[in-house]
Amino acid sequence: MSFPWPDPGTPLAEVPTPMPVLDEDRLAANIARAQDYMAQHGLNFRPHIKTHKLASVARQQLAAGAIGLNCQKLTEAEAFAEAGFDDILITYNILGPARLARLKALNGRIGGLKVCADSAGTVAGYADAFDTERPLSVLVECDTGGGRCGVQNPQQAAELARMIASRPGLHFAGLLTYPAPGGAVAVQAFLTETMALLAADGIDCPIRSNGGSPDLWNAHLVTAATEHRAGTYVYNDRAMLRAGECGSENLAMQVLATVVSRPTPGRAVLDAGSKALTSDLLGFTDHGLIESLPGARIRSLSEEHAVVDLSDCNGPLPAVGAQVGIVPNHCCVVSNLFDRVVFHRGGIVTRVEPLLARGTVW
Image (tube, rainbow, N blue to C red; front, side):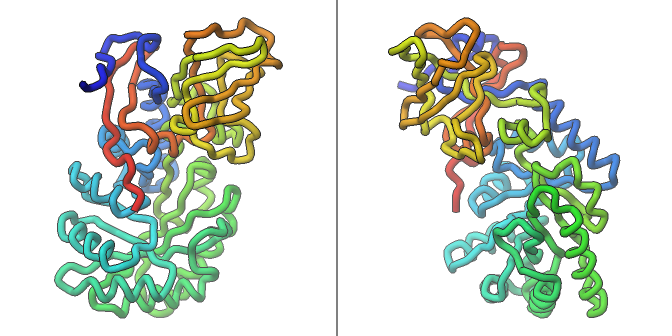
């Protein structure tokens, strides 16, 4: 027997919990706000779909003016290609015969596929799998201070670009980076120097892709970039709020939860545990923000329970059966924990949608 999902018109108070609920108006405003900023500064915008994993939201982003999509994994890209999207950048090294065979099939189905590489080994795998009949577009990933993937200096970037350009089945499409917040100066210097090295070799570098929601509103400082990628901005979360990248009026996602126990005056237990809220702390000491309960702290998660410390709350405390909304520390992970999300406007359900790319992690 399938679960009776709420119909449009249902009050949020009747939505089964735990459940991610998305504010339609805040979502639309976040999309418009970011796209307007990019247009103002002459930057292409490529939203990262790992935050929402929904075709409908991706279509809203493209309708607002985005040039294409950013996916993190091959299976994410496959899901969105199946849904009709054509311009997709996968920002992940793709390795191994099974993945490369799937990548080649995907490249044959859509016209705007692009991938990245930060090593000769990754490039060699692409080169062995692709040919001149349907070349693969490859960007060199650069570490401009983020300390994750990426070549370490412009000389290495230029060397890898030369390798890509020399392989018959590959097309060198440009450079990309996911920098540390506040890293605009480092990104600008890295891209500028690399572009000069490539120009000296007669190698065109059409795409310079910068990334990240934490530095979204500083994208204009990297004048060498042609596009910016961001994902979290579409919903925003507690980490973005702390960073000053958004205000409370921009928080489009909450995880709706129910108080299932009040064992002591200073403790509440919710039905949203680690299977509903991300365990990512991101520097916080608790697991989410309950805006309606100032001073409350979600101090621990087990699989099905969140334990809330109410000892610092001054206002009315929730009774058993009450619902609360939790702003997650990191909204992107929440999207991968549920099969469906509920959209609402003013506390009334507007639609319920299945996650298009839930579990697409390879």
